[in-house]
Amino acid sequence: QVQLVESGGGSVQAGGPLRLSCVASGSIFSLDNMAWYRQAPGKQRELVATITSRGRTNYVDSMKGRFTISRDNAKNMVYLQMNSLKPEDTAVYYCNADVVSRLLTRSNYWGQGTQVTVSS
Image 1: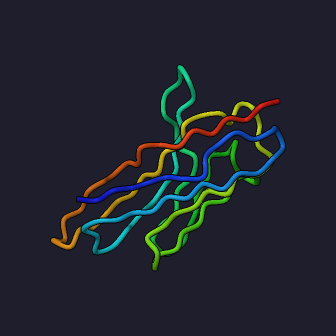
Image 2: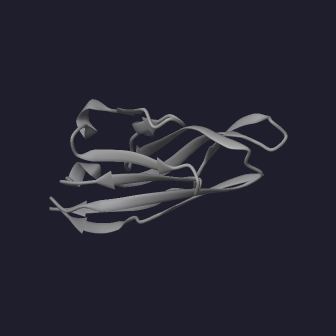
């Protein structure tokens, strides 16, 4: 079994930064694509950014230039640096990972989410 645990959420003033972290643990052989999603109240979960195992990144247009996704493969971690936060960035942020287990099976996992609240 694999667990993803996010941390770093909280409350911040508009314009401020916040850094989210996600650590993967369990029966892991390797981590492939990792991503951050978010879900605002009353809205569907949406993609924020993705990063491949080699570090290639992709962002949703509205987050480009403000958010940076990165990873540390040695630590099985993925990060989301968020700058110039806006009230509309308020949401629960979820970590997602494609995991190859030690049995060499591939599965997709979600973290439990971390709340980010941006006040104006």
